[in-house]
Length: 206
Image (cartoon, rainbow, N blue to C red; front, side, top):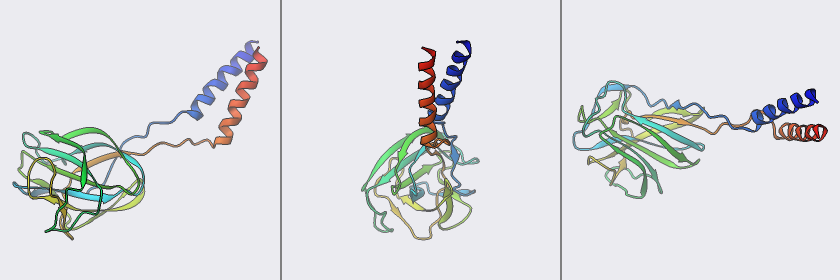
């Protein structure tokens, strides 16, 4: 009986291990390097991209070297239609989060594949959006899948409205961390076999 009890305990741990979902560690999206300058004391800059897969935004931040403080803002947008080129603008989006007077925040924002996501930020201490050291669009990857960060802006401070994109314009270097849902490393048939074995063992225990 003691041997059967130990077997059942081991099977319980094994089934729990393969059926549980691991928590993925947040990953920092490569958004380029802060140039040490930026634009503008009258408006915000940032970037937008199309999500190549589902993921969760876990945090936003101003880059190292950019001063936070009063007047700093961070915001995430989800667009319902393509972002128009300057001098056009749009309000066809939802704000998924807006934070004032903060240089970094923790978030829990779900993003679906195909979503058009915008990120805006402003350094109150420097009175500008931190600019990327590389001009123009910025090619990067999200969970190994290629995306392009394109310039996003508005001619105002505060919460987003009347935003636009600009072909070839420098992006605002706003840090973003994310995670993707962890997947079981054990195929479903193997999991079911373990459960069946555990139930059979329970019957023997009785």
